[in-house]
Image (cartoon, rainbow, N blue to C red; front, side):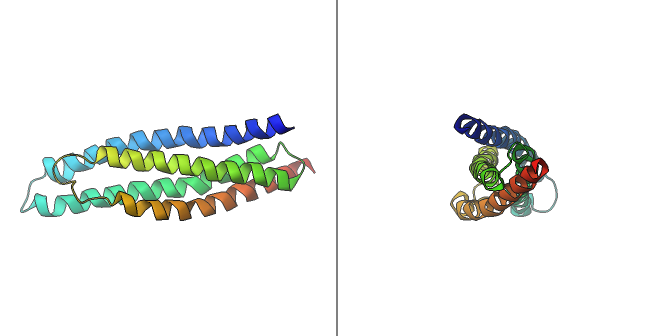
Length: 159
């Protein structure tokens, strides 16, 4: 039983990690495109003034998207993995804990992709990396709750 708990926990964290890597790569590409679009190749009156604002908007939007993916992924994985258990509380611990750990890996990957993509002209003051971590920690709570609830609901299919 204990080995099964560990493997299911690892499965949840692993899927979150895989999605996080995908988000990081997409964030990196998106940030490069935004910088190219709004700063480097921009034309008009003053792209050096407004370009970084648009790049910042893309950075924030990409980060928020990663935060929103967490609860959705937790609900799906929670239900699927939770359906392997007959005891709701056990399912909640495995899927809630796995979702929380996995979310933090996913979010750190996504933030890393945003930061890695922010280089070059017009990106000096776009994204406050230090400020995002408090929000990241708090954003894990809904993911934990949804993952645990999904696990309980999934375990109810075995009743």
